[in-house]
Length: 477
Image 1: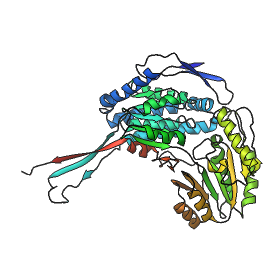
Image 2: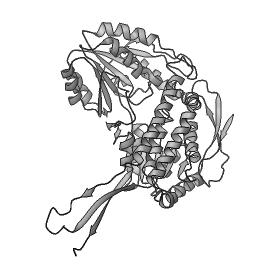
Image 3: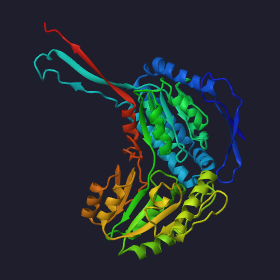
Image 4: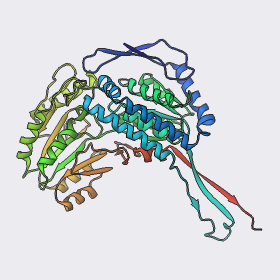
């Protein structure tokens, strides 16, 4: 069994070892050395010192070269990283492999953006008295970045948070999800292999409640957080003045199937967007509105295709739906489904535990807005299908929710598609694909309770820089 020691330079061993267990069968897969208060302080000291003495002096081409080296190492270790994701995070291996390949691309895009951090020149002779001045801006790193990550994309999210912060010229303290630290450790080790000086990137394996000690420290200048809204919005209340944040939470992603939709294209996409990683994705399709003229045909075909999904061990190449991340979340998902049924929802498919860790892909009908499976983020393999007649009614209903992330609509009518896209209050509208569609260079994030600011390689790097104005007065000869 592998043992992973502290990844904080100069930190003293704590010998406090945590047994990491597989979410599928609870087998011990590794031991992780947890940090303590001294580890936290050392990480903060490292981040502050190396921002001033290392990152401020490191040119963009060197940052880009290091990130490219990390991408190359990842590309050579796709199978190992995919197996790690499946084993510790429960994502089916075939999907984990796709995640790693995406993460390689995330790295390479971060390297490209590192050398594109350009400022601008300002025209200074627009008004009398300001002539004979030259002004321009430069972009510099903001300072030590705290990256708090999530379990559901343990390689690609770490790349999005760490590579972008480093590309912008910052030091990083990484706090991975407690269930998926090995993926983060391997990425941090790749950075070290690529030549990053010790102390520039520090990984803190600490309990969630200990993270507040880092969040509230005045040495932290930027926080990128991926996780629950309850935790994220609380962080905003306790940070130091001037600290900037990027929060990525979740929502109740709505998909609309218009009367002009092609069901042969829509249904396979919705199945993937709904049950990918057992629905444990912040933009997983949770509610599907189907026009009444297509409802019965949709339900028959959708139910059949969902029934073909294989649920089981994430390390099995044939698995489509893996385990729920832990027993608490499994119990919660089951409770919400049973509660909805007791309140009048109809169970069309699934609705039960397959074993001690997996929940069968579930379809509900007759769901109402008062039910938790409708008005809260399920974060599990549960989809509610609702018949509709008037698209504007859906737009009004969705716009009144507390969430605003990604939505989608399937239709062959361009006017309907654009009407929905322009009037729905979400950060993104996907036409003729599922709500969980994402490429790593697009702006990605939520509003309302779903988050603050957007991720995406270019956008995150821009957020993690300061634009400084430099003005020079010159005296005519």
